[in-house]
Length: 635
Image (cartoon, rainbow, N blue to C red; front, side):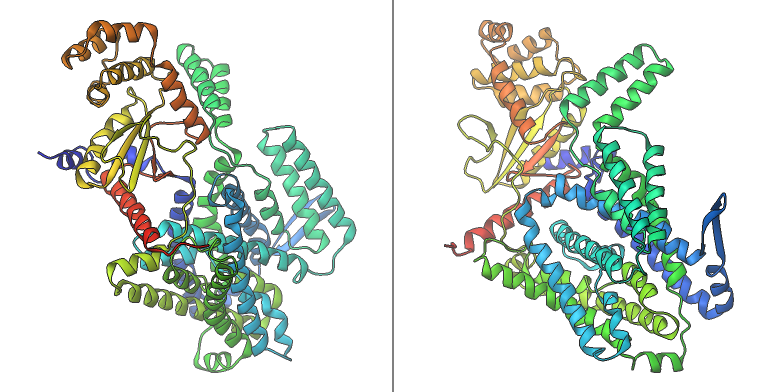
């Protein structure tokens, strides 16, 4: 049986350990994609409901709900509570994702923000320009903000259904554009579509928000306190006339994201071990606090709120706002209305054209130093799917219009969304007809990937398996006692068997706080390396992870016909400790805290480690190298 066959039988499909190793970005994308399906269902339900019984639809959403404390309070319709209350949580999640991308994601290298920011602004400007041109001289021109924003859930859902084989870079690029859209749209809501501003109430809101910043700076971890202060800001903004949904974005933007530090993880391990030895309520609380401290507030809050916003709040918003009575008279009137036409053409022509044009212009002006992270066909497809506006567009429409004009705006938004989905499908299906090499270049482009590996591979120093000059390098930080590393080992063997142009590098990261024999195993591997048998010892250690005591290691050395006296002496003197510490230091510099962690051509591999997933990542890396070699050198 070949190595690849053994890997396939050992880890068929996506095993439990593979499924559990997801990244924040992939979790976000997956939740948004699933939420898009629910959002579509809510939209269809709203249309069906209002066309079957419009009176009950409007009667429900116009029902007033009042919240009073003493002699004062707030009274709004259910629709307004959804739009200005629950949607605050939606924009909070948007703010969290923006902050995560800035702190640990694609935008931590600030120059990478320039192109998606320019593309987003170009798409919005072109769409608004077309809307204003069609509505020139009309009172409806004041609704230009409706044609700006892209719906994250719908756009990512459509991209998942009709997008290319290598979607992650395109989705990250699109997500950045969408986030910029949402930020600008919220600024527009606050400055253009808010009612007359009460300065006193606005100053109170600013003061309470400053208090939130102070409490956060003092590292206070009381969720109820933050919620109470945020509620105060929301009420003050509501009274000031500024749409309070802007609070959500601001709160998300101040919530830090950071990878779990190895020191925090080790402290959490110690706390849990203490609880295991003496399971008291006090130690249980300490262990819980320690575990929470190891994870950033941004990650915890995204996990808490993102499913609620994607699967409940945004679909509820659609149910409350998407309903329009459709009949022949309405369609004939609406499709002749400058509002409907401005939204449709603004989205379908302005959005893709603006995103493509701005991206191309910045690439030319920077002489290729700034370029999209994907190919130009993917930019065009991403621009088309960015024409799918819904949530924020509906929100602005409810602020800008009322009556028949609001109905016409809703029809324009729904029509543009349907046509954008069809246009996206057409673009990517046409791209698939290209020859393979041209198709890969059109989808993936030739931009440099973000380098995550702090210490480059040195063939003279690192332990390398495979051809030393291979175009694709896979680096694994591993622990000989880690069960996940043991399960990944046959996958790596299958990868090397399937790809002749891949070199594999092992670097040590013994997690001594949870694996007491891991460091001794690493030192045994280094002692074997001195005698030219690193990989033979590596394979034995991963094959016998439960037997890494000194007598076991001596037995393995004897099995490999090593010089036992020299091997025993190297272990006794810890001669490999310096080399292991160098690997551990390089792991710290690269932000590695767990095992196994893989890097493919110096870019961190996020997600599952099954053979199919790693093979796809290796093919993509090889394709990028091939494209880069064919690109003419830039001055």
